[in-house]
Structures are given as structure tokens and as C-alpha cells.
Amino acid sequence: MSDNNKIYFAIAGIVIISFALLIFIIKPFFSSIKESSKQLFLTMKELVLLENKVRQSSVLEKEIESLKPDLDRIKALFVDLEMPIGFIQFLEETAESSGVQINISFLPQQEKIQEQTSFPFLKFQLLVLGNSRNCLQFLEKLENAPYLIEIENLASRRITEEQLKTEKYQGFSAGDTEFNLLIKAFTK
Image 1 (cartoon, rainbow, N blue to C red):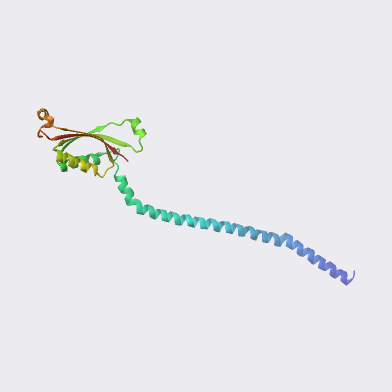
Image 2 (cartoon, rainbow, N blue to C red; image 1 turned 120 degrees about the horizontal axis):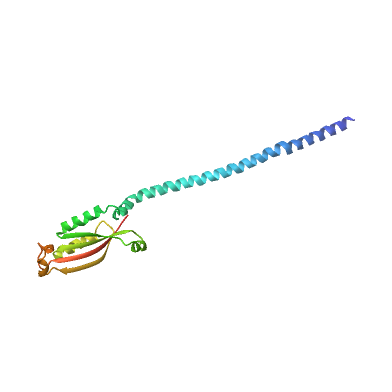
């Protein structure tokens, strides 16, 4: 073998070894770099999405905090279903400050009616006795109550001489007014 052939074989060997290195070592290395780059890109994309969600949730939390006083006021409009004592006390205090006598009766709920409405409620029957002006003042205070209520029925009549003879109307005079109210108080 001549020196030229040896050189050709050496060059051919180097080229074959270079191709083998390229195919078996460098190409997988670059392929893994390419795969790692894709993975890094996807991870960074997820990170950006998470940062946006965190930013949005903090904005939402601030919004909720700013709305909290309004939500508390809205919750206060509803009567406590289990213990409506605060509402009953409100009715009694309002009657006293209006100068009328009140008799409060709780009406049991009818479940079919209750299921048809959006909000649960309690019904009360109120018998209000006093002079006309004071009874109207009581109604006005009831309309402006800090509770969400609906007056379903209102019947008014003057107290007669015959009624004054009964024990129920002791202390009243002829011409005073008797209001019979049916109210619905919405509950939490």
C-alpha cells in the first residue's frame, strides 16, 4: 500500500468516524437540547399563566374586600330563620316608639308555597292598635325597616263603641284604629 492509499484510508476512516460521532453522539445531544428547550418553553408558558392567575386572584380578593361591607349590609337585611328574636324586638321597639300597641303572631309555613319562592321567609300576623296618626307612623317605620320584608295584606278599621267594652280594647277611645297586617320577612 502506498502512502497515498494510506492517506485516503485514513481520511476515509476519519470521515466515517466523524459521521458515526455525528449520528450517534452529537445528533442525540442536539435532539435532547431541542427537547429540553421545548420543555423549558412549556414550563415558562405555564409559569406565565400561573402568574396571571395569581394576579387575577389578588385583584378578585381586593374586589371582594371592597364589596364586603355591602355584602354584610345585604346579609343584615335578612331575618335569622332559626332565631327571629332580633326582628321581633325591632317590631316591638318600633311599635313602642310609634305609640301603638302591637300583638305579634308567628304563622307556620306552608312548604309548597315556600318551595315556589326564590327566598325562604317567615310570616307574621301583626295586630296594631292606636290612633290613626301613630299607626301610620308605625307603617312608615316598617316600610323603612332594616329588614327585607313584604306587606302581603293590610286591613284597617276604626274601633267602635261596642269594641271598647271588651277587655282587648281597654285604654283606647272610639275612633282609634286597628291595623291587621300580614307580613313576610325574608330569611337567611
